[in-house]
Length: 213
Image 1: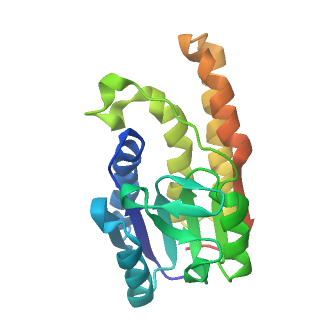
Image 2: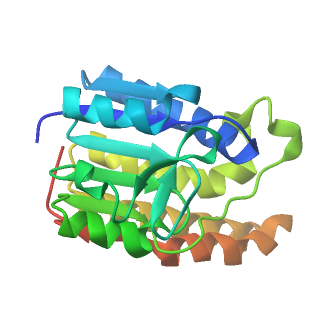
């Protein structure tokens, strides 16, 4: 696959605020590797711009950040970007990672059926915790890092040339490492372990696991 990455980054509540900034690390890495990045940020993360950009620029890799459900992923103001039975065909021939609740339950399989190369995401709610005093500095939120670090690891691995399935496995290992660190340190954050484990258990890789960027 040739490398053009399309990223959606709505930013209108605490959750999307965090995802917005954590996705910047991925954008920076991609640009540093000479990969063309199409950044649909804030209000630009809407259905019209998304569909237009995919049709016009034909990105091979799509990174979706935002809220969602079992049959959809949303963008700015929680409005639908992609929905099962509506426009999942837009993901045909794409490698997709959706950092969004539950979309791998129905939208993921529907996208693969419609011709997506691979769909990585979560089959149930993606949970992450954060420190309210870090809202102005989300990249230095060590609590959020326990959840968003493994997510970014998946993207980092793909951008470094690893296959979808291997990148998924590296992300899984990162979740496990974070759990082990909390256990070994006897941290006061032990209560977070069930939630990290939840994300690990519900992260999935659908379609062609051998696909690379």
